[in-house]
Image (tube, rainbow, N blue to C red; front, top):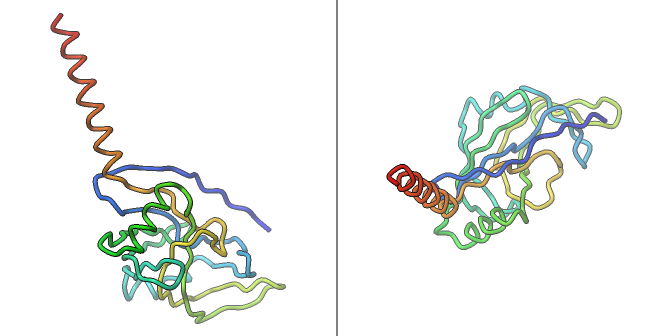
Length: 169
């Protein structure tokens, strides 16, 4: 079975509750024997790029914008922090306790090669945050946090003040 590796990176920005990742990857077999083929999401994405974001396929916690890429389905999610479950999910994301993404879908077209089901066309219903996704390579790669941004900005300002004071002396 081929293995794919994706770099893990934490990014920060001003908007809290936002994250980026891969909702699905192409060309690797997941734990239930499925392999998503490139182009499987073409029709779904043509109808709408935004989908609901769920917590473990049950509670709606935000929205996710999807975009196809050579490696898989890119996701930019935004948790609705007015919702308690979304705040909890965000805390778990920031701590690194939850990093998995999973998709809720309907199979439109597939075939088997050996024991692996190759998904050729998928109707995507939702994307979920989950600690244990069926596809080990589908997951969050960046979590944005306004608190970290504020700290970094303060450190930059402090550094600038020190450099200015040093130039003045």
